[in-house]
Length: 343
Ligand SMILES: Nc1nc2c(ncn2[C@@H]2O[C@H](COP(=O)(O)OP(=O)(O)OP(=O)(O)O)[C@@H](O)[C@H]2O)c(=O)[nH]1
Image (cartoon, rainbow, N blue to C red):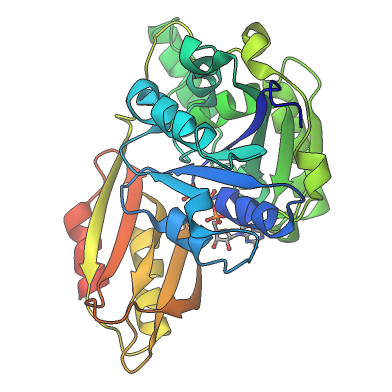
């Protein structure tokens, strides 16, 4: 590559649990160039970074993954993101392509804007913004406002677009995209598919390529090399937050539960399902000890759908610390959720 050429960066956006980490892992496993990943998450526990480091792919050394667990990328651009990017570019053997996985609650546009900062503007470009959509969740109406509630609210205050912060984040992510991955295709019926494509079409003011995926399985050459230079094309990417400036995630809450060892994976999963059924939980993920097992159990929930797998041995000599990050709508009942998980 020409040493003066800008390093292309792909921003992966998408709501909590849409499949971003799954996609990034797939890219790491199949990349044909030297990649680095910057990963950021809401919840400050570094689960996604751990999952990616656990991929064990030879072409993916652990130092290719940089974790920014300090809040949300879109709000901490100057303090965290720009220095992290410079750190990667200044390495003796810098990456040929950088993938940035944003937190599920982040808005991509402030991050795209950051590429115009003088410190990095001549060195990097946004090759493309890829929005991962949880097709099953959209089909189930999780991001849709209740039309009657919106009508009532509009009658009271015409400046309000939505009463649903989920929808706002979701739409901002779609509006910024160069490529949309309609993920979790395995969980969608044909009717779901039609309604989701229609839903996305209503939001988007311009034509954007849409590809259906299962577990983020898309050829890497489709994903990398879009050549969008999105930082020079901000006007085409409207945001609900263009007028308000920063958003501060005040619509969402997160907390961490320290978990004891459980007798079996099912013992924990039953509790997680109950917590998700009874409370406004959007996402749960963490590592847990199962009695008598040398490996840690990775558990992840999107709503009531919980997946688990033994992913790695616990580190030697360190305490086996089971922890679960729980993310939900503002004001959800943390005490109630803890009681279910620990009861
Ligand atoms: N059935 C199904 N499950 C999927 C698919 N893609 C991802 N998942 C599962 O969905 C859950 C969330 O996937 P992640 O890749 O962690 O999602 P994410 O967008 O990185 O989540 P956050 O970082 O928490 O926002 C995991 O349990 C995945 O295994 C898919 O295509 N089909």
